[in-house]
Image (cartoon, rainbow, N blue to C red; front, side, top):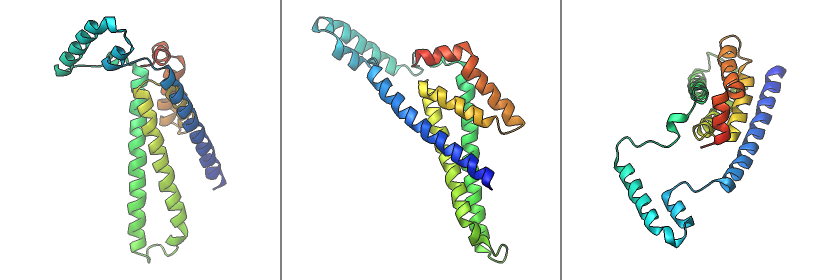
Length: 197
């Protein structure tokens, strides 16, 4: 029991650090972010370049009408980031399904008090378990959002998640070890995070 409380408290500390780092990194990225839309670009241009801005606007409208218009970096997302996103998505769904199973199972057992007479003793633990699983699912969702946009804080958070995932021996160790390799040593993945999106 003490071991689980210790693991839970370590996870909560890492989660808090993760949230703080993501907020700081997002503020920094907003300050450094170059103009992304045609409107932002045209607002920064001198008045002499208005015809060029008009041509850019027409090109943007033309691309919007094209059914298969893609973003400039969509094809350049490396395999390591895609792998981490898939692994996070699988764990997200596992957390959601596990919390639903715990909630439904608990309601079923509470409906039949003869099955487990001490069920109300376990209610705080059940609520805590559902809360922790929901919080982990939320973190995985936000982490996947950061990986979609190839943000710097997402790489650090993914490394922390991969190190924690190494504890899930034996299959999880292999899967999270591969993810840790991609986040730390793969040149294409590191270059994508340095470039940003």
